[in-house]
Structure formats: structure tokens, C-alpha cells
Length: 356
Image (cartoon, rainbow, N blue to C red; front, side, top):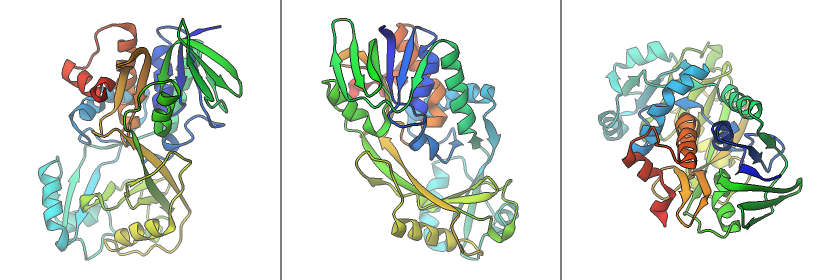
């Protein structure tokens, strides 16, 4: 039986879209992997930072705040920017373009006692919250299923065809038809568009690596802010009683199940170690994820300019969780033909039509 919407992709973009679109009609979501949120959505730094991103991204982030609060998935974290004497110019540039407030090194050490003597400059911001990503994904999945949505895993799209009444997608679990197709395929979104006979938008996946290390010196890290090196040359964040450290690299790659490169991870850990007093003696785990950006680094949300029955929710980059509620609400408004809550300039900045 044909559905109203068929969503390709079971990451945060697809699951949030399923929850919103299921208010409008019948929904089937197909995910290639054996579990939902297998790729970038399970490997996120999980931060809500309303000062992070270009104007259209900021608008989505701010518009998502109330929904994330209502879901009960936010908890205070805060940010601490640190820099060496040689990084003064980068430090001052970041402070000038954000709401970071410079503080003394002693004040910074009161927040994070392992900061080392190389820290010459520090600034803090309280405008950042942890996101309970698993809770958010499960909440969206429950909401979608409660309205009759089917969320299917291990069902990669193998062929896509336009039909007289909509779309047909072939998968190992059978053929699925729907009036409208939603492309929430993350790093594979351009490939899905090409399978559907539509033009790709120039999306590029970038690898980012992460290591989990034991709590330095056995300290309780739970109240520490997230740490950033100047120029986002590395970052560290408390996580489940340990610390996750990333080299914050951005290496363009092809869509795949990403893994970290040892040398890149080692270089990032060295940049972190240069700013703290406690060495990294072992890793508890390491992984990598793909952050997929459009050429202008703004999300794609809305109908394809060549086929209004093909809807995009892609190019989330590093903003997927913090923009999910507003991006899904915008997609649903455009699908329903109702006025979006966002202003017209933001809607236009997010429209896939900007790439033809």
C-alpha cells in the first residue's frame, strides 16, 4: 500500500522528519543499517550551542531550543576556550566573533584543574548545553510509531523510480511506494538524488575523529565545561565519567562507515596534551563520524527545484541534533503548504533550489 511519505535515512534528520510528517499522513522510513542512528547520529559531540553556525543555521538552532527543552534532553555544560601565547590572535578573533568572555588563567583552572602552564589566555561562555541524543532519538521514534509510522532497518535503497502517483523504492525488504520521497540520507544524500534522477547538490562528507580517555588524574569531570583550543584545533568534553577528545579535523571523504586514522588522532591528542598537565596514558575507545556539508555549509530543507515530490533534509554538518526540531517542523510545513514558523529569508537560505 502506498504511503504519503517515504523517508530514506534513519539518522536524526530522518527520525525527526518521521515524527513531524506522521502528523500529516502515513510514513515509512527505511534505514540501510541494522539500527537507527548508526552513523554520525551515534557519534556526535552532542552539544546545543545557539551561537554556532551561519545565520540560517543559527535561526534553526534558536528555533529548536524550546522543543529540546520540552523533550527534557538538555543539561548545562558551558564552554571554555583556551590558547597559548602564540595563539593570541586566533583567541582574540574568536572572542570578538562570539559571546566568550575572557577570564584569568586562575579562574579557568578553577573550572578545569588540569589546565597547564601553556594556557596563556582563556574565555568562557555559559551558552552551551549537552544533548541527550539517545533520548531524543527514542522520543522521536516513539512519536512516529505512535502515529502509525513504520521505521525499518537493514533496508538500503537499491533502486528508485518515479511513478505516476509518486515514488517506488526497491530494498532487500521489498518494494515501497509513496506520494513523496524524503531524502535524509546523510553522507549518501547526493547519491540518493542521483538514483532518483535528480541533480546532486555538491554535498561533501568530512571525517571527524574522537577518542575517549579516562578521567584525567581520576578527577570528577562531570561539571567541567567543554574545552576548545583556539581556532578549534581540538576539543574535549566530559562524557560518562571520562573525557572525549577530538582533533577537530575536517577531511573530505567518500560516504562510508568512518573510522579514525591513528596519526590524525595522535596529533589531536598531542595538541590537547600541550594545554593540560595530565598526559594521555591510554584510550578507552576511538571512533570517527562523517559531518556532511553543502557547499555553503547551510542545511538543505525543502522540495527539490526539479521535482516538488522529492524533499530534502540533508547537509546537517555538525548541527544535526541542535537543529533537528526546527528543521523537521520546516520540512513538515513546506510539505503541508502551510506558513513556516521561520522567516522568509531563512527559509530561502535553506531551500535546495539555491543550488539549481
